[in-house]
Amino acid sequence: MGGVGDDEPASKRMKLSSEELRRLSNGSTLKEPIVGSSRDLMARPLQSEGGEEVVGSKGVIKKVEFVRIIAKALYSLGYIKSGAHLEEESGIALQSSIVNEFMRQILEGDWDESVVTLHNIGLTDEITIKSACFLILEQKFFEFLDEEKVMDALKTLRTEISPLCINHSRVRELSLFIVSPSCCFSVRSPKQDTSRARSRIELLEELQKLLPPTVMIPERRLEHLVEQALVLQRDACMFHNSLDKEMSLYADHQCARDQIPSSALQILQAHTDEIWSLQFSHNGKYLASSSNDCTAIIWEVDANGVSLKHKLSGHQKPVSSVSWSPNDHQLLTCGVEEVVRRWDVSSGECLHVYEKAGLGMVSCGWSPDGKWVFSGVNDKSISMWELDGKELECWKGQRTLKISDLEITSDGKQIISMCRETSILLLDREAKVERFIEEDQTITSFSLSRDNRFLLVNLLNQEIHLWNIEGDPKLVSEYRGHKRTRFLIRSCFGGLEQAFIASGSEDSLVYIWHRDTGELIESLPGHSGAVNCVGWNPANPQMLASASDDRTIRIWGLNNLSAKRKDTRSNGIHHCNGSS
Image (tube, rainbow, N blue to C red; front, top):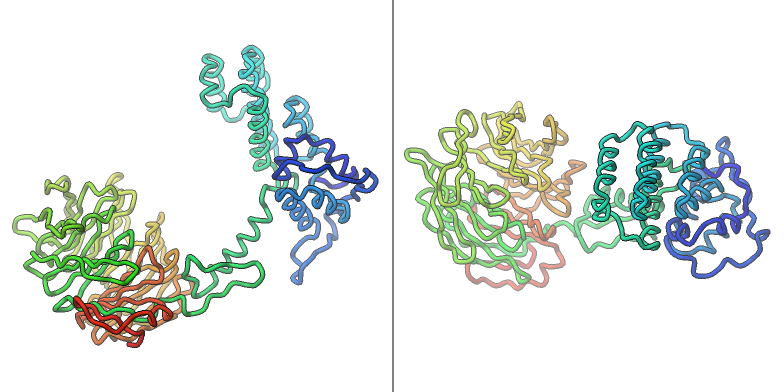
């Protein structure tokens, strides 16, 4: 461990460090001198590795490491005297005298001496030593160029940097700076002393990342450990679902069940037949729904709730799916083996109809830049269109089914579709590489996570499977409890950081699971028919929507919001008091 056997007083170590050294190691400048003599601040030797003391009830925290990290945090917070007194009282030095000397040499530009000191620190990994030397000598090289000492820079490159025999591409780049020194100034700081000092601090930070943490404790290590603990508590919290939920260091974190949207705040009743799909816009300001009544509806979401904005008529067959454009200004609707229509959200006007003679569309989606439209076709192909209706490409063969979802990843590279009853196609349209998710049961629907890493797959046997689709697809979780015997039921990701899974069900309930644990945490009653699909507002983790054969959409929120709603009806909307 760096610092073992260091018996120099804390005051002497502070004296060896320059002002810049304090700014790096301590996180701030030394505002007041440390009072007291060197005798008062004499640091006792560090404890040895063998038989180290531990702290904490579990016996896993080494006292030496713990004290050093606390001292580092005190210095970073600007508590210079407190940090020094902690070193003195504990007898545990933050860093050894040789490390302090090394840091001083770096900040003062004593390059040759710093390389010698580096070799004496006690590092055993040759690659680490060479990489650190490279960084130091590169800084020396650039400062020679800053001072227009081109020959000195050339000598450093030839006799010191090149013989390290590492990072050859970077060596070639440095040689270009010799040929054209002006290139250097486009990437280096101006030649003032303060600018060079700042770059030396940056060099020291890079060296700190490279050297073992036992030699130089990483910056903000205590903050990182505390944040890590809080994140682990948050992730383990079954009901964590609020951006505003504060986390405290004073007590372990645990949310109550009331963070889950489980109270019906509104009932939307503008459709006249079964509702088959719904989807919130990316910004959470709109909700689109489609129905067996051959219409789609755009609903507006605001602080007062959800209200009808446009009812979209024009399809001659039931509307099976909807898809929002990346900027939420337009909406696609797909009729059952019919056409895909593109609508303007603001006006409700139909902007274009995509169709193929003698064939019908079965699904729809957008490219991530909003310039192209994708559609599944009932001849099992997938087409890509320009907005004006010109077909740009068609992937023929067993690419999709007559009943299938369609997703395009946010980088635009992959098209995802059901290609067989038990298989989902992951088509890389640029690399022309096909991957497959293979299930033992018939697949009824699927949904892509916001980060494009996971696919939620609904199966005929009343199971929902979560697949990781990075690299070779891998099944990572399963969810059970909902009912599905006859109808197409859709599920979705949702909640804060998509930590939950929601699904419709033929028993008229909405089911919610915790994504990581797979535990069923809610089954929400209220609908009087099969719940065909659900949608979670991406901008509001506490708003969930469900659509049913009972011709209604229910908007679910927190229990404490239901008391604010009045039991009124207007424009096909019923505001609930929280009961089902």
